[in-house]
Every structure is written in structure tokens, then in C-alpha cells.
Image (cartoon, rainbow, N blue to C red; front, side, top):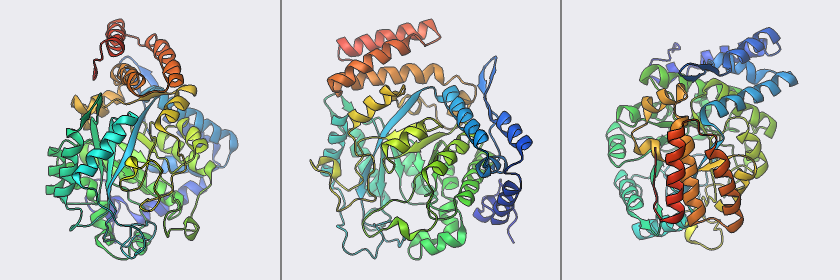
Length: 482
């Protein structure tokens, strides 16, 4: 029988079923232990030091106690501490991105995804390089600078060579003042050799959702295709980091299995990456099962209500304070607003989840991976963020300045990342306002920039940022960064 070991490279040892079940039992036994809950919340709070701000984070057991807690005032305290942590390390910035679907050809049999092989009535499509260029131009015309590319698993239609060619095409498109400055990649688990190729292609973060950490449930949900191999999939992030990719992203698809089990497994995976590679996940995504072509979310009996979903996000933020957290347009405006307050630091905007969807005037549905709940334009999302006190950021500076992996984490952990990220967010927001924003977005945006410039603590940094923003407005110069 497998024994729990966070430093192991074997999936069933670092995501250990016995340890998860013991964790859930411990959490249930202590869910109303006020003294313990207060101790855990106190441990989670950020503390100011001479070198910035530090946060202890929480173990998967500690965080699971908070998730199990049913005391209303303690739950409210979790939300408050989660927001405190988010503001301490990420400020009021929210990074924006968009998914780009390259192909929905897939040979897997995943029961929750409309791209599964047995779905014979969905339109199958794969973008040509000319179509990739057209999609990128459409995204640039919206104002996007950061993409996450998506493709089904199909060695014949979507080999690694195709993915690499698409990345090269995306980076090559320079349209008006538009550039895609960072391409994140969300494709199936692959080999160390292929991860090296992705690294050489200049990708940002490699993202792979586990879907579920429950091994038996995983195998039942993936009855056919290469994704059926639980260990190969779960160990993919280790191969990616062995292949030189500094930043990897985790995520589970909440609703497939019991959420408390998934939560513990997700945090154990983060602890494993930290233990083995010295750096945890760069991002954690929190998607929920949504309706899609021939997929009914009601078929899965583990769906979670909004209030539990928000609580999950808050507890993740308490446990892994330095990790970026992502929520997509799967969720409604109302849910996303709540999630932004408890730790989310990245959101998608103006997204289309169909292959070739951005060049279509009307939103196509025939090749969508899931129904989009938040269908607002990017400009509407940008305005909404500012209206609610968040700075929309299109920044990609850390990746392009080599501040990735442990270098990013060390800066984030001592709070010094704020000296780069805050002015970079304001400068990229100014680019958006000049090139893409509606008049009302532009008006509220420059008011925010003026107020936020005054909050930059270092006078020299503030002066440089102010001058760069003037140049963006008056001389058509772009791409300033600290």
C-alpha cells in the first residue's frame, strides 16, 4: 500500500488517498473547535517585516479544518483574512487574459467534456496558421496581451509540432499597437522532451487541470484514451519542471467528486511541488462543471453552491498565499465579483470557448467546450473592475524579465514584487485606455491611474511611471516595464 510522501515522484504517494481520508476525518472532528480555528486563522494572516510582508500559509490539514468549519463569524473571518492576504501580495490588481482554442479534435473519452471521442455530432475544427493569425488579430483588437492556448489531445491532428507552430505564429503577429506578450499553454500531459520544446518556444505557464484527485473516480471519468492513465497525468507537472518550465498551474474541476476531497488533494499537490522543486504552483484555477454540448452538469451529483465555492477560494488563498488564482468566464458576473474579494488575482474577459470563435461577429456555439456565463466584452469587464476598485492589468513583465519560478516566488514572498507589479499594471492599463477603451472606460481609467500613481511608495519609481504614462498618451510609445 502506498505511503504518503510529499517528496515522492509517484502520484499515489504525494496524492495519497489514506492521507486525504485522514485529513477529512481530522477536519470533521475539529470543524467547530474554536480555539484551533482561531490559531489557524492567526497563522494565516500576513505579517509585516523589515523586508516587506511574509505569510506562513497553511498545511492541507489546517486548511481543511477551515473548509469544514460551519461557524458563520469564523467563515466571515476567513474571507477577511483572505482579502488581507490578496491585497498584501497582489494589491488591488487583477490580471486579464483570454483562452484561444486551437483544435477540438480529441481521442479521449472524458465524460464531462463535449470534445470526447464518442461525440459524433459536435463540429470538429482545427485552426490553420492563417486562422490562428486572424484569431490573434481579433484578440489584439480587443486589447488582450496574454493568451492561454487550448487543444484537445490528438497525436494525429494536434501533435506537439502543431502546438509549437501555433505559438510561433501567435508571437509573430504585430497588428497596430497589438502584441501577444505571453502565451500560456493548457494541453494534455506529455513528455519531458516535449516540455523542453515548449520552454524553448517561450511559453509562460504550463497549465494542466487534474479534473479530480480521486483515483477511482478519475479512471471512471476517463474510461478511454491516454488520459485514463491517472499516474501519467498527475505526474505531468513534475515532468514539465524537469523539462525546464519554471511556472506550472494546477486546477480541479469542482463538481466531479466531493469538494473536500478535491480541496485536500489540490493542496497536497501544491505542497509536493514546493517540497520537490522548491517552488509551488504559479497559479491555481477553480473551474466548476458547466453545461456544454451533450454534457449535463446535473449528471454529476457533486455540484457545489456558490457560497461553498467562494469559501473554497478563500481557503486556497489562506493556504497558498503566494500563488496566483484564476477564475474564468464559466462563472457569472455576480460570482466573479465575490471571488475577487477573497483571493482571485487573474480573470478571463471577452472569452469565447469555441474554435475560431473570435473572428465571428455572433458568438458561435457549435464548437464550444462549455457555456460562457459571463458574456460581457473585455471593455465592459475592464470598466467593471475599475468601478469596483480593482486595477485591470495586462502586465507580462515578470515573465519577460526572467522573474519566473523561484525568482518570482522569492520576490512575492518578501513583498518586493509590488515595486514592479503596481507601476507595470498602471502602464499597461494606460496602453489599453489609449488603444482600445470606450470613452467612459477611458475616463474612469485615467482617474484611477492618477489616484494609484500617488500610492507608489518609491518616489523614483513613481516619477518614471508617470513619465512613461505621459509617453504612452502623447508619443504612441508602448511596452514600458520595470
